[in-house]
Image 1 (cartoon, helix red, strand yellow):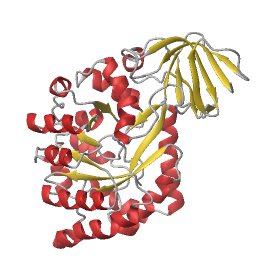
Image 2 (cartoon, rainbow, N blue to C red; image 1 turned 180 degrees about the horizontal axis):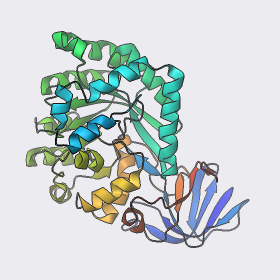
Image 3 (tube, rainbow, N blue to C red; image 1 turned 90 degrees about the horizontal axis):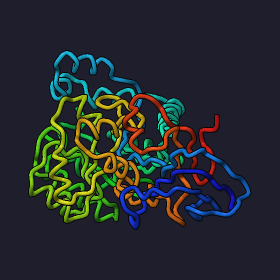
Image 4 (cartoon, rainbow, N blue to C red; image 1 turned 90 degrees about the vertical axis):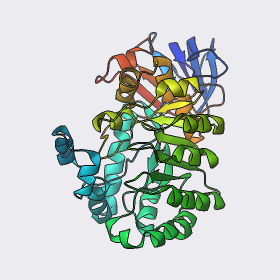
Length: 387
């Protein structure tokens, strides 16, 4: 054994165990992977964590972590009562981030991305999905994806965010460009294709065209849907066996049932929901219909400028009415399933990505919101935030 973490309360999130799969004992690491849990013999290096909670490294399955600038003035406008659509129609929103992101030199954008992902790791996150979407040109999106692909633990997603102002006169041509140029060229870099299907972004028909192109090139799909209105996109995502359906403040029963049948993960984004003053998603219906739920930060400069998942767990358990167990599975096993990665669990053979917390009870993490209880974070058995 390369490393043995002793005297731990290990949250395995193992689906073969009940609940969160808590085991009192040791966690053994060999070759960057989990070797054993429970009663373990000696290792080359040992750490006694004094009864602390040890969990899988958190998985943030929805972020927009690559961007330039900020939009604090929009926060002020929303605090004064302006809506998301009112701000966007006045030239704010996503469009306000396009210019700075397009213009900033590569090195500055890489440093900004590195800062964001470092803060995520210090919050316990070891796997993070990162979307493009703040360039909205073919070369610009490829530039973002190349930078994302260089980040350890990142899962890159090509995002069709909206139609930029300069392309609104030829929407059809823009959608064809996404299908015929963006997707084929992004395939070596992106793990999936995401579309914001909303009245302020892409229509159902446009989304179908983009999904069809993604499927033709062997890329799975996911979607921002039901955030501001219900266009019926849940049925479309289910038709394409989408990896995830994200936001879902507005979704009908037929859509929920279809997503559950398709095995799509519902990604809860409470930070954006609360900041935009939207109604919470129908979590009770998701639960009743067997729809798997994940929880993510939606890290972005407009509606959820937050790098840490424990804050989102607090919102998920208070504002959304999720249980502590659901919130924990939502940032571990279920989030990993939304990305189709093998992290988010501590079982033999899984990557040795884990967090040690200054706590002994899983409920303490969302309960102590606003205070970092992260003690150490390991990736492949190596301490990545050594103090």
